[in-house]
Image (tube, rainbow, N blue to C red; front, side, top):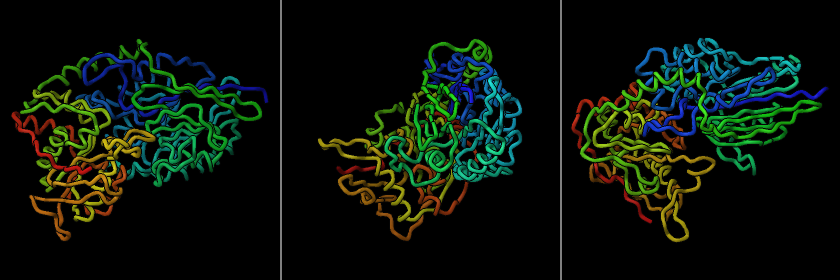
Length: 504
């Protein structure tokens, strides 16, 4: 056949990073979807695609969904300005419920492809298009079926999400039956194997990108979910790539089809140039949001400022203590666990909403589980894996929490129990003491433990929680609970107890 070309611009895991704004400071930075789309050069042989997790993840999306009536329509309008042709759903796109997804999709010009999702209006499995140069392009979308584990039950009512690999396989058969020249899978999921060495990164099926490449013969796999930048990769004949999160970069992919498929993908920086139309759309909302962010709601007796992650984990974090303080009051649980994001803003003494939503950025809710000492020890051992000792005897973050991506958010800070970790001991055997109210916790005593719903699902290596009985669930988002706590108490004494002792 005569050579035919196709260009794709691909974004994924934007997580509400629409404008070039640092919400922690209010300053301008060279990131954001408005900047990315300013670089897109579209013609009839070009597709613009997004891999999901667009609706959630920034203070601005928190504002849109808590303070305005039609956040999804605003986001769809931005995507329409960008000229998007196809999108899939990410697990975080379910965070605001089915109605929010459907509002977004109804206002979106792009088609939503998600072959393993049923029950959401506006979602299709596959599509076949013919470009101006005559190339028949088949596209399928799938999302990680771990959304069933991550998401609150009420947000999944009426929605079915099946195995991503199986759906991708069935979709490929459907596309081939339509005599396509090239087949593309848009997958909101990452790679379970290292792309260079093939080494296993995760034994779960949360990410199945490598398997899709190895066992199915899609020509292109556009990956996401892991927030891991990957360009110009090829696995078992499938070209694959993945942009990082928060619209720091996008993928530009050039494909040639002539007796086979070849492709080159490049990671491109968002840059400093913002789309004028996107700015015009978002600026009024950004101005209103900024005023809302800076409204003080209470006073703390100490500044809660971040340090290096290893220092906070080793010495305790007043930020985490405060989050646990809020969670304990909200649930009445015996003990609490909280985690911090990879980037942590911290809270000033005069707490503003900007402080809170910039420091607790996830739309998590609370779950309370009943745990035994054995189960609690298993969870603590997972957190103890965070620590390693370098050749000079200095404490450092273990490689497992740094590669393939940084996972500081998978280290948990506990309040209500005094634990001791001996880092000199082998991984899995480091927890040497668990005290509750000053006494070593007995094997037969049960405690109630509250944590965010993401962690309670077992995510991040805390599989033990799946075995624990759920005592209660609180549907209010934790960031809202923090705002309500500060508004209720106004003048707050922060828990300054050091709950963890490290031996190394």
